[in-house]
Structure formats: C-alpha cells, structure tokens
Image (cartoon, rainbow, N blue to C red; front, top):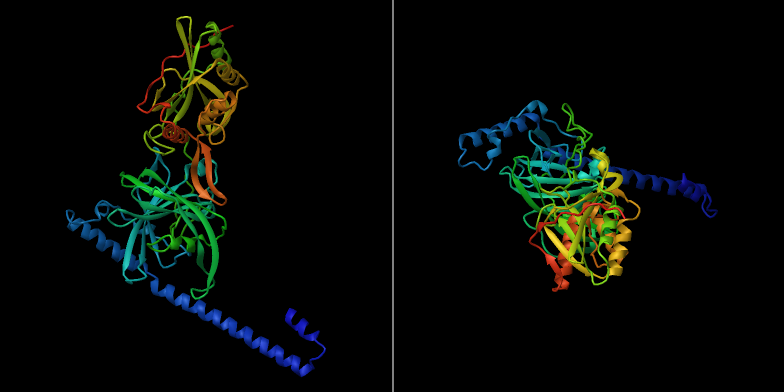
Length: 491
C-alpha cells in the first residue's frame, strides 16, 4: 500500500506506466518469497536428514549398554553398565533441535551439598559423520537465582550446562544468564589471564547464507569452580564469564565462536517438557546452608565495646584483626565445605597488665530462606576457627572510631549487599583502617556485566593481594583459633 501510494503521487507517470511498475514490484516480491521458501525448504530437508526415529534411538542405546556390559574392563562407558534406561521417558523437544532425543537419568549434580539440578542423555545424529551418537548433559542452576526465585522457565534460566562424553569426561559447557549464553566452560584449571573479544561476530540471520555481522565487545575473565557430578565424582572446571557491551537474543550463535560443540544446543527444561514425557519441573529451592558459628550467642555490640573502658588509654596498645573463614580454604570459590564462609573482626586493647579482646561478626536473624534478607545481629565469635588472619596496629583515635561504629545502630543483613564481609569492611572504612574491599564476582555473568558482592572469599583474596603489595603486612595464612571474647560489660 505504501509503495502504491508513492507511485500514485508521481505526476509524470501515466496509468499504464504506473501499472507496469506495480507489476514489476509484485514480481520482485513473489521472487523474494520463493527464495525465502526455498531457504526454509532446504533447512527443513537438512533437519529431516538429521532427524532420528525413536526406534533408532532405542537400538543405539541398547547396543551401547550391551557393549558396556559385555566388556566392562575395556568399556569407557562404565556408567552405562548400571544405567536404568526407561525408554518410556524418551522425549524430544520442538526446538532448538527437533532431530535429537533426550532420556532423563537418575542422579543429579550436587553443589555445596545441595542436589540442585538434573542430568540426561542427549542422543543425536552427528552433523559431520552422520552417525548416531550421544552425550550426557548435566544442568546446574545458579543457587543465587534459585534463592531469589528467578528461574521460572527456560527463557529465564541462569546456571551452568555441562557436556560429558560417554566416558563421562567433561568436554565443554556453557554459562547462561536469564536464558542467554554469557560464557564458556572447559575442563581443568582456569587460564590466568583475561580474554578480550573485540571483533565482528557473525550471527546467523534468516538463513545460513545470510550472516549478520555485529560488533560485539566482550570483556571475559576465567575462574575456577567445582561441583559433584551425577556420578558422584569431583569435577573441577574453568568458567569464562563475559560482560557484553552489545547484548541480544542471538547468544547461541555467538557461543559457537567460543567452541560450543556436541549436539549444537544447550537444552534446559526447567518449567517445560517434551512430547509424551515431560522434562524436569522447576527445582525446589534449597535452603541456605548453615554459616560458620551461626549458633553462637547473640550479644549487644555496645556492651561488648564498653569493656574497653576498663583499661585506661594512656600507654595502651591497640590491635584490630580481620579473621576469615574461607568457603574452600586456599581457593577463590564462594561456596565450599565451610558454606559461604565468614568474616569476623577482633579488637584488642592492652594496658595496666591486662588485655581485653572481643571478637564479633554480623549474621542474619532469619531462618531458612529468611536468612537471605533479614534484620542483622551480632554474635560472639570468640574461639572462631579461621583460615586467614590480618592484624592492623592502630592508635587510640582510630580504635575509638571503630568502637563507635560497632556500638552504633544495628545493620540489616543481606546475603549479597550487606553481609559479614561488608560489615567488617565498612567498620574499617568508618575508622580509617586499611581493610581491603572484599567485592568479587558472584553468580552468573549477564546483561550489563557479572554480579558482584562482598564475600568472605573476596576478603581472603583481597588480603592476599594486600600482602603481596606490602610484604611487611602481618598476615597469618596458616589459620588458627581466636581467643575467647571477654563478653559484655556495663559502664
């Protein structure tokens, strides 16, 4: 209609010439549609060539299981020997790979003592060899996204997808944020340098012959992580998370540049299903794990600080210590055997032949999921077993500023925005003590960059970095046990 209107408004053209132009335009439009239909038809033929029947899938799996059982010593597919294959649960999804099938497997990934995800066999026809093959896919949702209720369907999935070959060796994987691929997973330790991608990346348009070139600027960094796979084995892997200056829904194609392989897709089925048998439902949200010394005695911080008045200030000595319980000692993991870890602050005043020491830490008051965001409370952290301890010598003025901060208004607790690590850092800021910033990457990288939070692991890393820059710094990296606190006093 718009083109006809333009033609009719041209006074120099007579009716026959306008008709000729219209017929030419119509012919071009029809040719374009036929070309698009031809592309769709070719794509459909390619998908049909890749497609598998259910009988083919069952035959393939039976042969794999039979071979594994007949030659258990020589078989690389040991997990198939004990597999309970219920072929009634075979299903395939309409997208993104209609030619492949999935078989749910018993067992699930375990992250920080919580069974968070699921695993499945993904059976497909290899695009190169044209042979039927399979891989194990383990889906591990991001614990923080689960806690916040942000995973309510595939388009909102945040977490990690792990690909294993039939020998159950990790081959590759992907990191997703809100349904989009934002990073890569590789076996083994993480590289120690940042990777910068700043070049045009081809993104498939309406057909494979119609690439769309987009300038994607991504700042990517590697980290090391671990979890217990569905076979109960420790899997240490490296993860590359990226922050994109241009971000859109075509990240599947972008990930292909990072080396994605296997069946060509990263299926995740939380809140969705396939035909016949449905996929896994949305997982139950696990409760936060217990924090180190969270059952310790709650104290009034002001009364704890009042005790220091028992020692007169002239000629007194003052020390402040930051004590860190690492989630996984010696690593940068934000979760580990010690839960999220903990950071406590210890104040000591020596004079008149005596020393008064108080060790405290910030904790939530809630239980279960309410731990994540609740009214804060101060607990006595005397006798705390720690992995890292940094000591700062201060003067009376700095010490008194610290006392004023700790004895002041109680802070609300938030598991990422203001936690034990935040509390100790802010206390140092208020007093002018050079306690380093414990901020670090957490969760999954997504639009606008990765998530950040103050964490005990971040504090440990910051203290080690501070030590590296200041060799004379008093940093105990051998761990120990804090001395008992004196407890509350009345003026």
